[in-house]
Image 1: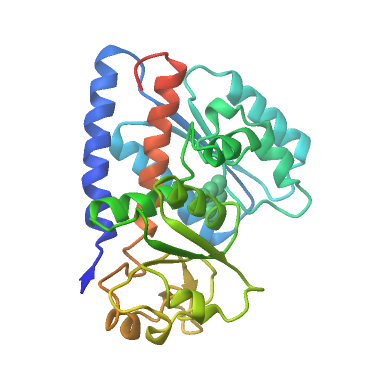
Image 2 (image 1 turned 180 degrees about the vertical axis):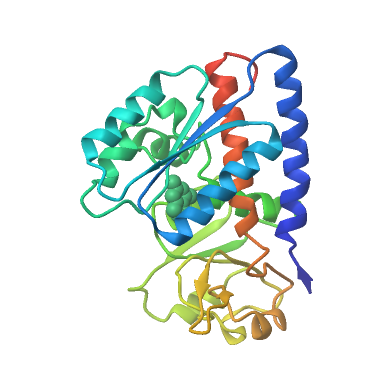
Length: 284
Ligand code: GUN
């Protein structure tokens, strides 16, 4: 049984990214990313700080725009318009969730598709769905990198995704399908979940239920990818998968923390580079 080391894989991709940014700097401007956060959600603040730090380490220019909870939607849209128009900003990300009085859909739709490094707008979601992506959504893209770099078989294999969110489950299914996996998407209304999970050669869980997936739900030899980041009552971080029982059955498994988590920001850096290349019209 192999524990897939997301921190190590992420570090090696970030080294590749750093080298690429250094090369871009010789020829022109470095890529630039703007991250907007509205309000004081503690988890979001940590994520945003980590995104800024990761940019700095990679040599990518970044701006973090912190707005108060009571910011009006119109003001936020105005800020996005200004960032859309700035040549030095190649990627724009609005950290979710937003306060309730702001319409997330309207906000993500305002970002120019060419700068939508989250790949959240309809045009970019559509491009992923037809198999011609501009940007790959960061979390499922991170999962694909883990699968590739761990040598997992996707083509012709049974891939079961649990969760159907727009951020993870749906694009995950599209990306596995593109690589010729036989994909099933399960969700909260799925009957006999265990019958699906037990068939999976690759099982991806993105449901947000601590330790929900146990060893008995896993096919012997399966690759188990845990996208969940949950907090137990005693404040510890744990995944959707009960690691100890799952590790006895799986051939490969991602831990939480240290599995998928570190990959998400790495894929954001990659998308920011892609955005800069597309906008500066160099080879992608
Ligand atoms: N909140 C949780 N995950 C994400 C993400 O991938 N992007 C953004 N913008 N917000 C998030």
